[in-house]
Image 1: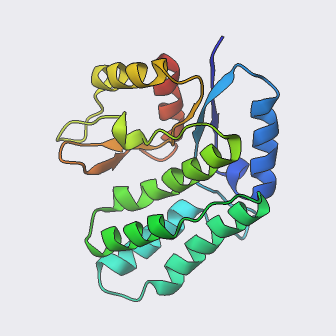
Image 2: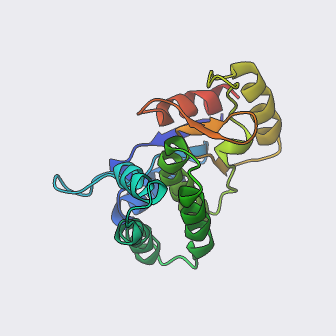
Length: 196
């Protein structure tokens, strides 16, 4: 049996939470395909990374000061990486994100980076291959999800993979523009992966 497991933001908000998730996955060898959300709140006064990304994008795309906002996001991920003692550096990813924010790649792109980065960390932590949702989840030019095209591509991709981490919440439109599902969309990704 193959199982798809999806973990929400509060489950992946810190290194401590990541370790709990790792234990859950490793406790059952049939839990092979993992769909992570972006880091959520660590406590009631905390801010979800998705909201931090929206704020940072708003600032960067309008020419306002965004450095502190971007540094705070980077710090959240570095704390997780350090807490998991991973040999992983996301500097290149953050440089790309910063360039794309300034280039106004869209708020959907901005929001999706939380799942994307958490997916990279999760794949390193578990030793599972990383599959970018932008390579396997498709929308048409109007932003309507394409279930059959997505299923065909994802089924073909996963057929050769015993395990994988596929970030939730987003996919791609023609021309490479990132499109997100509505909030809570990682659940949808989980269902998409389970079908494939």
